Image 1 (cartoon, rainbow, N blue to C red):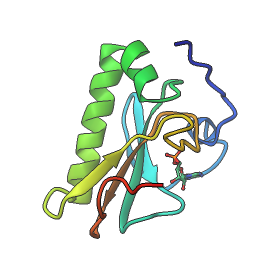
Image 2: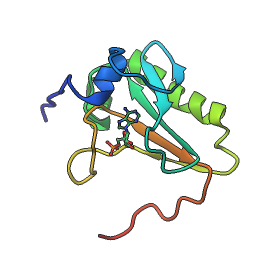
Image 3: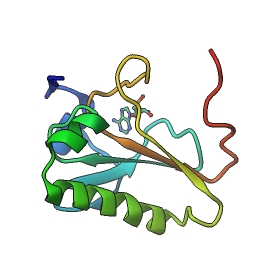
Amino acid sequence: MPYTYDDQNIFAKILRGEIPNDTVLETEHSLAFRDIRPQAPVHVLVIPRGSYVCYDHFAQDASDAEILDYTRAIGRVCEMEGVADGGFRLIANAGEAGVQEVPHLHVHILAGRPLGRMLERG
Ligand code: AMP
């Protein structure tokens, strides 16, 4: 399907330096920063620098270098935040049913408390 990227979304503004962020990691193709409304003691968002709406868009259109960098960046943040021992969750919401608020691909890394079951009905 065609993906339409809105370059006025808040993460695009963060990438352009128009609004501040609490940076955790910067790489050539990715940026990780703390969620402004954390839902767990560790709540970091990892985004590609490229203009990708959601994960499937990225997986289809990103270069091998971007995909490698992004995947490694997620791994490095997990390591830096020490989430492996206690366990963690990665979430990539997409579209309406996924209740994606910001239309620029981001993975949530959540850890530091019991996170409950993956989905609740309703
Ligand atoms: P999603 O529902 O997956 O699109 O999640 C968007 C996330 O972005 C939410 O957890 C918000 O708290 C977070 N968020 C929105 N604006 C900012 C911002 N300026 N800095 C950091 N996180 C943000």
